[in-house]
Length: 111
Length: 112
Image 1 (cartoon, one colour):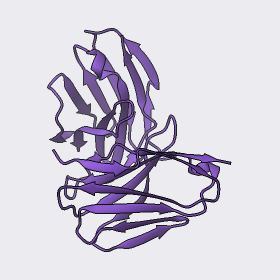
Image 2 (cartoon, helix red, strand yellow):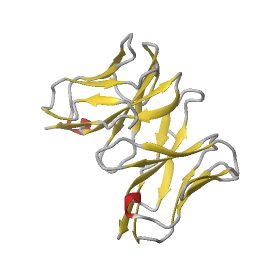
Image 3 (cartoon, helix red, strand yellow):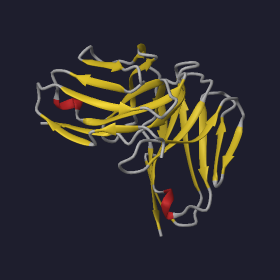
Image 4 (cartoon, chains in turn cyan, purple):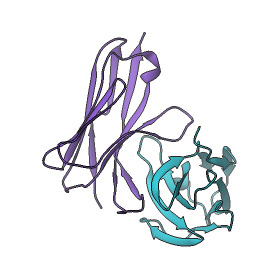
């Protein structure tokens, strides 16, 4: 186990709704990255947070946003959900951005 | 963006057989990483490679960083049922900060 926990493990949302996913990083880790993994694909980098600041972003629209808290836990928010947002969302934590220890993911289904 | 081409897409083998999978890119990389993902879990790092020509083992797993810096392979010897899963190659595009680009994965099935 990596010590990275994500919640919830599964959820179902309706198109147009908003969703918040949560990640608790491994103890001592100050960097959190979020990835989207569509069915049959490898994970795709969404963005990274380092010491509460966004530190790099992948090719995702602004309706994907995030936060990192003083305890280094993080949230991923997605507004105006689309059917294609259905995926496994993975959080990875590390110390100073070195390495990536993944949580078990949140399976989001948009109907 | 950078694309990692991973092959084969899937493999079905008998327990005890050796397995080889590879990953290629049109760009030169400074790192190659190999991850395994079990069903319902996040990826777990198996082997990290940082230098062209580097050959690294982790138990029954061996991976090499190609001399051209555009490819890498992963070998699994004497496969066992728990080797089942999806194997991903990945590249760190973020320098000192890990911002990973993954291939599409190789699905490995091991028949006991």
